[in-house]
Length: 217
Image (cartoon, rainbow, N blue to C red; front, side, top):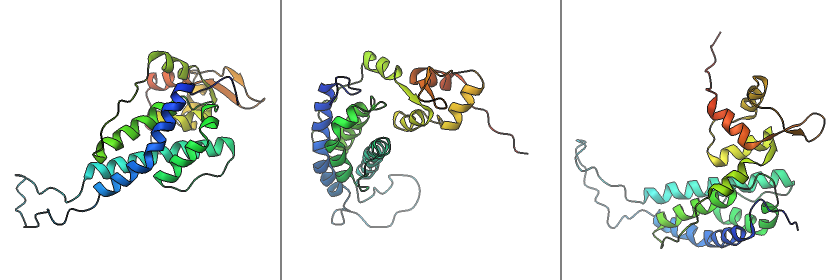
């Protein structure tokens, strides 16, 4: 498809392997979330805070399932919007299948650099919460992070990507404010009206510039 990948080929293989495991992990999480009625002790206890009664289901599995769905759905919807394709239904299995089916398209789409680490990390977490054997997951290296920071996107693309990398508060409005106050400048224009910024510049300015609360009035 292309000689330039935002997700390198080896990471594409790793990501495909992780996504292929998602359906089984989903089933394991569902099993772990089932109430253990037979083993639960339903005798009432005085609320003293001493030895609180454990819940009859795996809270970690519930949290892991929610996190995994949010992660997979976020990347699937982002890709569907960027590439103008029909998004999947909102389930772990359907979003994982969608991302596998469009993996090369994802890898060739600007802004997808964090997808490999973000998705494999959530799948690792979900696998652990489900009780399955934990597989070793590659950690991001400085070279890959530097490459991600060099990516050039418009304000909407950066704001969307910010949700996946934990850059809280980095909205389109925030990016506009950073530009208006001279904290960032466009590196180029996609057309005569759409400024393009370097992701690293925007992240650095965002973290270095305190957000002030509005004064009501």
